Length: 127
Image (cartoon, rainbow, N blue to C red; front, side, top):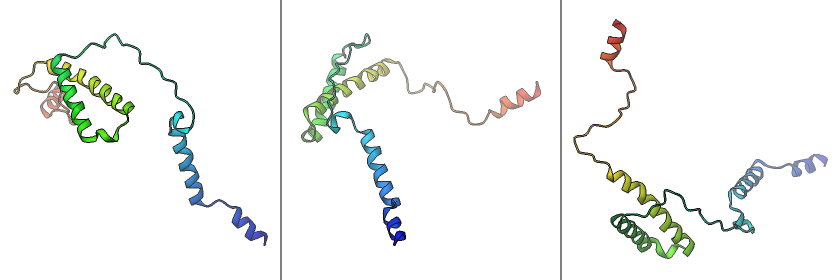
């Protein structure tokens, strides 16, 4: 009989994996979802926080409205505020990129070369 007791008190691989998965999931969850409180920390104003151009603001607003038309009923007010913030922040680098003058015939600034150029390799070998 002692053999049966020791058999029942052992943890199975499945039970161990389930417990490990639950522990890992709990470790990844934010504190406020586990019953704690999350302090509201306002984002400090950065020196590079300039306003968007009117065209950029209109484009950002159009993107926001398209997201809300498609998925608006799924979001809480806090999530909607995050979407507004993220789209607006994403619009700033787009405006900066669009200011760069570029023509269709312009070559790339850098080219990935996995192997050295054959002509350059021969030239280096002859020196």
